Image (cartoon, rainbow, N blue to C red; front, side, top):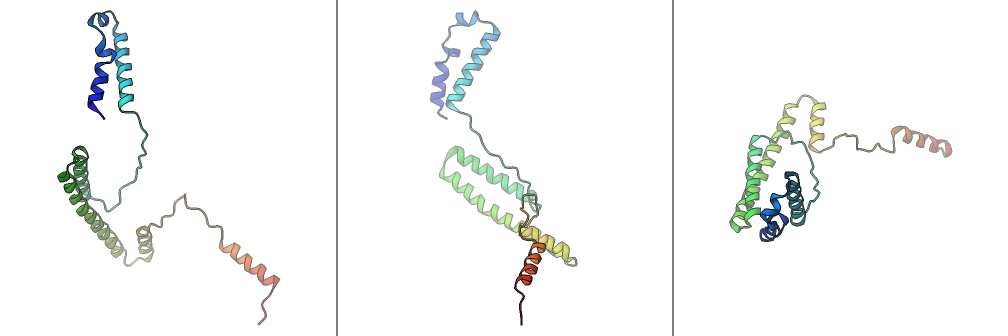
Length: 167
């Protein structure tokens, strides 16, 4: 946002352009309306509204307080860089991102290795853990398969009736 243009627009607005005598003759409701309309118009002009998409995702099970601290520090350095655009701030941010990703990978690997090892005697739980690792979740958005065992069986039964194999 261009602060100089914003200040110029504010100074040339009815809020600052009106004389004190004009303002004295207005009621508090009229003064508020002038204030509200002026600030809305200037805000819309200099900082127009925009829509954003916010994705809410649950945190992973392995994401603990160490990961949270690392992510917080990384975001803090990113915000500092985005405000200053200095080379030193960017270097500090990038230098923090790499160890954060390494920490995340280490925590995730440790979590899943422990999870699989703890279910060593139970194959069902081991397969469930493996499916979670491979992200094979069964959810409502997964389409049902078009080919079922029953349909396949009927296909071969019909084929056998039409042209039986002779050996």
